[in-house]
Length: 455
Image 1: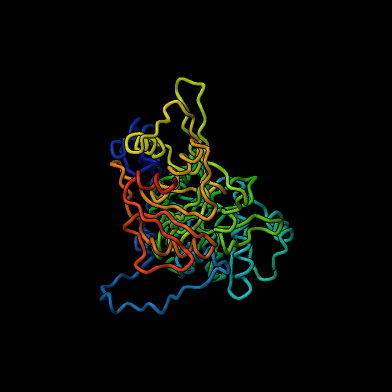
Image 2 (image 1 turned 90 degrees about the vertical axis):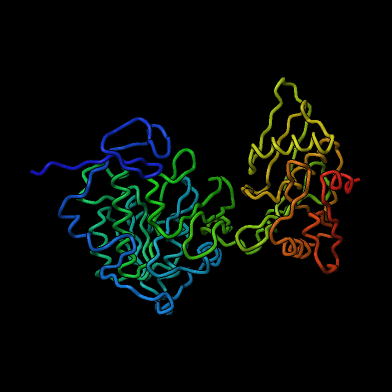
């Protein structure tokens, strides 16, 4: 019997080493190197003629001579999912969707597959549940189950052989952590198994022009479990976020070779599964009619559309020597930085105050256009003075106290006008060139000007 060849792979960056060591010298991470069993010579010979791209007969072509009409996009029957994917599903694309337990990954994909099976051949492969359990969920959600093909299998080679015989247009692999390749002598879910299984499935999808959804689990830190090579070889990576006891779920794209990154799709969890939210701004703006101190509305830009969200701040005298700074839905370090800017350039000191900020609805705000709205919300709570209900705010705040412009400023103002807002405090550089009917725009260039606008 031939001796097995092994290598040692970092689960964070994918770097390989001839022997185990405590720290990865490439990404400097500790305790991330695991043993990886190299595929046998038989397997290597069988797969040597194809890479992640799935081409078996490579040839040189001119870029303008490539036929784009041969692989048109097709809809997933969910407009929010199509938006996140960049306009629809591309044949042969390998798409990874992750999320915490109970987020609704399997539910969403089962709904998509049942709807698509009406017009296209669709195959759902489950490795974590029995076929009876999936059928019970489909019946509970009242989904059309006449045409969807099901398969309960965890061996990747067997799955590809059966799928090749059925020739589906779209497939679901649920999940990659339980799949295994026979030639790799390690347990399912290990670095080597996840790596080889993902590579095998990606090659199969591209060679046969089958769109494939791959479900992935997350670690306790919220990152996709498995080696980084898993995210490198697939075409798009999405995360379904939301609390298991909450009503709304957000689907965010982190990588997409066929569309914009950071697109956001919003779904509502109901008794009949996930439903699309066509107007996300409306659900995130369920405000009290009475004006409340510490509340402001900002316009953020998610992918290709504006989104209105409410931010709340609570500033209260601290009983502790080290006041607390807690941010939910925002960057904690940026909150500390903005408090320093407020002290230096706004002459407002909160060193003896506890500061709590929260984005209503569970939305995660990552862009800097929320700086000005966050500062005004904290000032409103600190002075116990309410901001007008018809006021929206956006703008980036620099360390020198200047208000910097943000992309798509005019489109943000137009979106706020559609929801009945009458006043806007925006960066001076984002001032619309034409007067906007029904909207009073207040341009500001410095933090002091924004504070004076509240007087």
